[in-house]
Length: 328
Image (cartoon, rainbow, N blue to C red; front, top):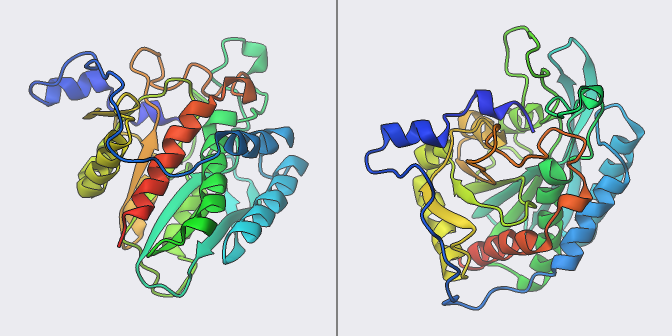
C-alpha cells in the first residue's frame, strides 16, 4: 500500500475537528444478526489469497506479476459473464515505464444499472517500513495489502454466479497501485500512486460507462480488523457509506464495521472519485494504535499469508454480497 499515512489526517486529528468525537473507539460488542448472511466460503477466499502470494511479490515487470495476471484473468473468466484485460503503460516516479494491466470481469454486462467492486492486485516493490533495514529494498508478498481484497472479490464472483443479482456488477482489479516513492525519498511532482485506478477512471472500459457507485477493498485480511468510515468516502459518497455500514450491522458485524470516522486516506477510490462520473468508497482496516495507521505488517516483508484471517475475509465478503443482493 502506498504512503497513505503522510496523506491522511490521523483519527486523533479528526477528533479535534469533529466535536464530540472520542479519542478512542467506543466498545463495539458482537451483536446478533438481524438478517441471514449470504453464502460465502471463507476457505475458498483464503485459497484465492494464497494463490496470489504463492507466485511471489507481484511487482510490475516480474515473472510473478505476469503469472498472477494470467491466473486472475482465468478466474474471472471462469466466474463472470465476460472478462478481459485493460492494458496500459505505468510511468513510475523513478522515470521507468512498465506494461500494466487492469483486469476486469462483468456480470450481466447488458444491464444499465451497475455497481463496481474493486481492489488492487500488484504488491509493493519495497518493504520500506520494515524494522530491519536490510529488508527495506525487498519486494513484499502483499498478502493483506492487495491480495486480501482480490481474494474476497474472487469468492464474491464465484457466489454471484448463483445469486443472479438484479443489477450488473463489474469487478475491477487495479494494477500499479503500490509502486510509489520509498519513505523519505524525493520524487518529482505528480500523482505516483494508484496508477491503475487513475488510468481506468480516465479511460473507462466501456463508452459512456456509468455505475451507481463503487466499493474498494484494501487490507481486508487483518485479524479482528476495524473498518472505520474513511473520510474521502464520507465526503464523496456518504449515502453509500451509510448503506454498507448499515448492512454490515444488520449482519452482526458492527464490531468490524465501526460507525465512527476514520482517516483521510488517498487510495484508489480517491482517483475514481476525482476522474470518473460516479463515486467509490473504501473499506480499509485502520489501526489507531500503530505508528502508520495501518496493520503493523504494512509495507514489511511480514505482510504474508500467515497474517491473513479467514473470519475477516468472510465478514467483508458477506457484507458485499448482502449489499449487492439488496440492490434493485
